[in-house]
Image (tube, rainbow over the protein chains, first blue to last red):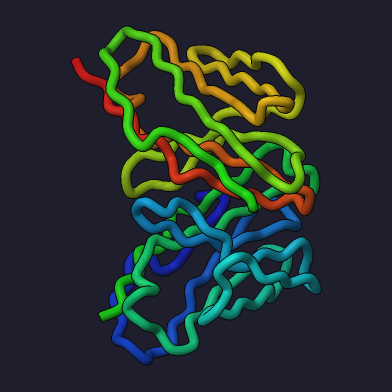
Length: 113
Length: 109
């Protein structure tokens, strides 16, 4: 089993719909992150959480919300999806030092039509 | 502002050596990371530098100069499977990353 699991892997949704992307990890890491990746823009941080009671906005949090249900689970919601939220979304984890780098999930390819 | 610059694309020949450069300007610095990302897949961790100098790991080496805000990733004995994007990322004062847009490397036979 993968260390960081994202579901779904692919999703097509309509404008205005609410959608949730889920992430679970078996690394035992406290820190979890949500990024989106767009061609030419690289990876941009949406939200991050350093423990269950800690939630922080990243550089592009508008239109998104998150929930840290447990140490191992961190979900991302799009309250009312719009076409420019079409992107590849990655969940990632790290230990408290960060020295070992991030472990990324396999990604969710989201298309909003 | 915070900024990371990398070349957009590079091409090299199988068996050769290639150097991918990264320059950065960030408000804090806790280390510089290199990731490899094959198309449509997740980035995977390659290397970490926090002190100036060269870190070698098999065919891959990474160099850091903090005073110059500069790093490079050196790939030796290139193989076809090295065709991928290489992402430079800096960990800032709050221990979250800023990523560059990545360098797409094409390895030709």
